[in-house]
Length: 377
Image (cartoon, rainbow, N blue to C red; front, side, top):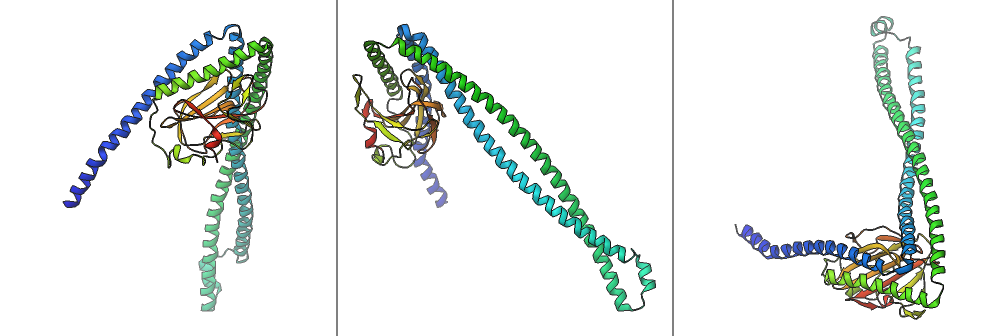
């Protein structure tokens, strides 16, 4: 009775915190829905401000989003093919082992049949009539029964193994057909990817020509930066610096200890000024398709194309902290997805009109840019 009462009292203490956690979760879901709607409206407004380059920007977005989608599908198909190849290899090994075992068992059965033949396949009555020595008779009967039982068992095992081999060969055949189908699908996706890249190149050339004037280029760069700031501001306003349930230590506790989003050389530091524009992140050079990892646990609050930054993914880490990953080739997470430190969230590319491959990485706290290097190991 006392034990039951103590458990009940513990539940009373825990219950309010559980309710509070559930309310926070529901609140976050509502915030995400409102955020998605607000950003959609914001993007429409920003598109109207693009002026003469609006059509070219839309074309660039279309081709880069297509490249991102195709790259993601190719990655998935490639992974599936590796799995199928591995399965085919396992089935081939099993088939070879079964064939070897069946060959060995066939020889044993052949030997047993030969032994029976040498005995003349005599019935028990014949054995009783032909044998005069009781000890020899008893030994002969026992051997006869042993040979028959062993033969019967071996024949049954042989039959089972034969059925197993047939099933394995059938599975192998289906797997090989799937491999051929996936490879054809992959080739089609690669062809479509090449077409999208050709389209992007042509659009980019037109866009660069339209912005050949330095003043136009500066104006465009400032507009691009303003777009990003507007999106970030909308995210911060919608989330209202919500507190997330974290895995282990909080973002703030891990300052100087966070893992890098990828391995690469930093070619542009925080605060660098180029073309009269101050950059609020770092540029990490890396090969195309390199995996981009989340630096900390959090929730994806933006996963879309943004002019000037290409395919962008933003993760909210709670308490006002956010990390941003820009110019990706493909985005592997959607808005609302939870991620942990080390999860692959994107792949390196040059979307957003860049000519070189790499990752733009930024950290923000309550709307203010912070030097990412101070947070990373």
